[in-house]
Length: 203
Image (tube, rainbow, N blue to C red):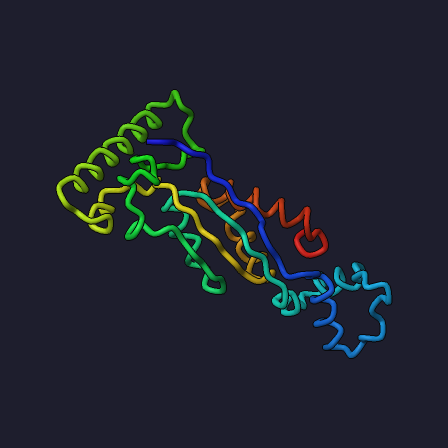
């Protein structure tokens, strides 16, 4: 069994997303003639649009992220309807094969320290799950049958694409104090990447 840290990486986005958003917004007011001739987006205009609550225009830009987290967090994440997901499948991925080094991978819970009794119990349960999963495979169970004993902490990879408005909504919910700690840590990190790349939209 291998214990991993969760990650989220902003991978791809609409080419020149701020220009796309400005073009959409200016269409509403027929102010296309006020776009900068040098092709640079008018940040003051965009900020005014965002602050006014006219967020439908930011739906014209999208971003794709690569996420590595646990199955429990992924179950919450895919509840966001206005997004596309491609996720590692426990039906088809047989962790008893050489390509997976004949082991499962789990995500370390951020809310336990390694000397906590709870952490030691978590680690023990995950190792037992791996042992039972491999034993089921050896007894002829398929991957989709043996997955019944895999823990929520099992590592999963997801490619997720959503428009900017949906990302703002996701960050508002999943970075809040009431969010699950594992989800919150993942989304705060991702939100910071969006803020660095598109501050006028995600500041």
